[in-house]
Amino acid sequence: MEDYKKLIDICQGKHIYIQTHNFPDPDAIASAYGLQKLLASFDIPSTICYAGKIDKLSTKKMTEIFEIEMYSYDEIQSAMHEDDYIICVDSQKNGGNITDFIGDEIACIDHHPTYEDCDYLYSDIRLVGSCSTLITDYFRQLGITMDVLTATALFYGLKMDTLQLSRGVHQEDIEAFTYLFYLKDDHLISRIEKNSIEFHDLKAYGAAIENIKLYGKVGFAAIPFSCPDALIAIVSDFILQLNEVDLTVIYAYRQDGIKFSLRSENPDIHAGEVIHHALRHYGNGGGHPSMSGGLIPKEMVRLLGNYPDDKIRDLFLDVLYQYKDELQLD
Image (cartoon, rainbow, N blue to C red):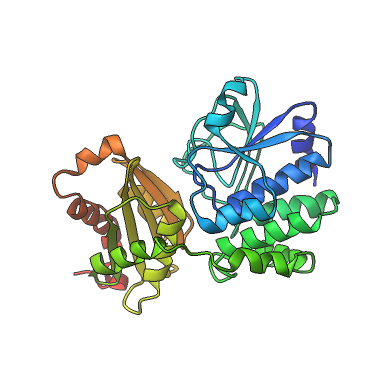
């Protein structure tokens, strides 16, 4: 309670920029939107911003249905100054999936592990299932009444990031889910979830199915064309459903480099640690025990040599060899 009020005190009298990671997913969008509504209740104006793009049908529908105003960095860069306050939401400065904006990152609200420490005036990093859970807790502890749109957005963000409460769930997530369940609008949830896959998304599924290679219980699949972050993650979840697979390494070749998504259903194998160590000399990566992401920037791809798929396989298998018995690696 005392810590939450500290954030409000820091932000008083300022216009706040709420920054998500570069390709905001439902949890990032919901968390930023919820925080914006929370700050508004204390008469603190804010702008939600991101780099990259909103590139999935379900996230685009979400911004439209809830009338969430989000601005790309290109749209607001000329208006920002070095002393502007930025709050990182569902992300951390120097986290690898967030662009360094003009301004001062004074606060961070996130649910991912920290791989590079940063000094903030205020920090709330809890390893729970979703960032929406944390924002929900702010409303509850500060005694702020939550409107139905905010509750529904946060409910959807929590639901999506925990895969229907089946992945990385903590007690705090259950409490937030229960609280939001009675405030949400079921009709709005239904509108978001219907027709959430586009026709061209099927090509990514097809490419992954065609290219999948199994090494013990590790499934690798390369998508040889550009895909949004969210779609790569969805394909990773899809491949993990194979009975023979306990860990997936799915990646797509894009203009900005090679984007990765990992999923692990073995509680002893931390997906975030695996990708962090596998990519440490070529790019960056991190995340939760059961799911993680990473990127090899385009300028580093050449270091993979003439056979990048083979090199990528070896980078991950070298890290995973310590689990050779569990993963049935030769």
